Amino acid sequence: MLIILKKNILDFSCTILSNVRIFAYSNTEIHLYAILMAKVVHISEAASLAVHSMVLIAGSTEMLNVNQIADATHSSRNHLAKVMQVLVKNNFLESVRGPKGGFTLKGDPKKINLLEIYQLIEGVLEEHLCGIESGKCPFQTCVFGELADKFSHEFIGYLRNKTLADLISNK
Image 1 (tube, rainbow, N blue to C red):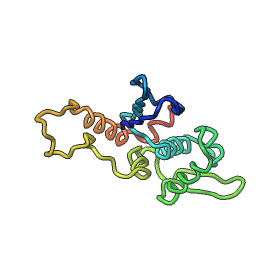
Image 2 (cartoon, rainbow, N blue to C red):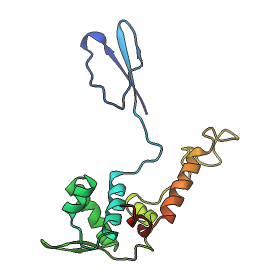
Image 3 (cartoon, rainbow, N blue to C red):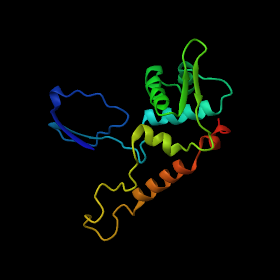
């Protein structure tokens, strides 16, 4: 994403964040070109919390509550609670209320893959990421060297083939 701002130098003020770069100016005006840095693969905080929480719970011999998981993942308790609610409603976890309550895994960790968890939170992943629909691209060969599709296929394949049981020993 490219944002172009023009401002008279006399009243120009701006806070520059770590992901913004200024790269052009003149004597009378400052032209601020802010390039917002993007990630090649975007994993939302909610999807990350869901996967991490499921691995933590699958590897635990005791019930884990929201506070324990939030501490382990260094995340917001409120955001985590919403994610956990989705996992409970979709029968991935069982929830027990009360001071000694918490969460336990409902299924076999060998049969729950990361793609199921990820897509529960994010929806179905697209395998074609170029931005231009197939058949509509004006070029005969992909200008991205088909890397976006390759990354997408590899990411989806990893999530599909990696189960909670595979990750329990990696804690």
